[in-house]
Image (tube, rainbow, N blue to C red):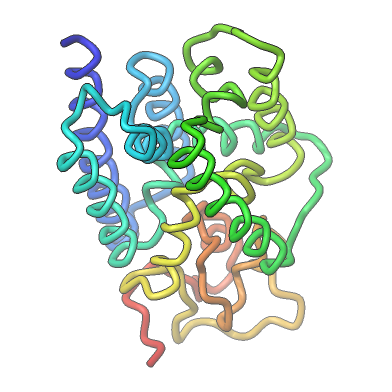
Length: 257
């Protein structure tokens, strides 16, 4: 009963945080302090109640082990957040998911960064990861996220040497932007596809002066700052908006046909 209550609390937090983040973005009241605040709170939620963990919930659904939440409800929740991403872009991944938040926070450490701006590489890898994840869970009843130690990390336990894999990914995230989100998250793959057609996303406005050496491009950790990008790997990290000298970038309705 306690665990079920925690899951419900996580879902409520997920919806509320997503609404607040996107509302602040739309009203141009989002800032770096707000970003840090949501990141820290989401991490705390992850360690305290292990929620909201939609990648884990997706795995539990495939394994048929989602006992705390009825299967129809769990399915509905996963579908709802895909639809919300279709409307508001990847706010859930950016600020609500504890897994992404841990990686985001560590990336702020003052260490040399190794950027992977090629958006094709993460896409290809995740097109391999997603079907593998589904087949291994549905056919062989093996939870990859459990095997690599995702739950062990947030429960502060190590049950096997494989548990160190997720810890390694977290450590790497101080150098490479969100390695698990960009290469290993099966649910993130679904959300990235929905984000391509998001109604609201980061975009250039009429104040953009098309810099010769765009600051937005130099600070974007995923190579999504260009006006021609589809923003499928945009986590609303705020860096491009913060770096723009003319306020030529904003979060708003996508005007592309």
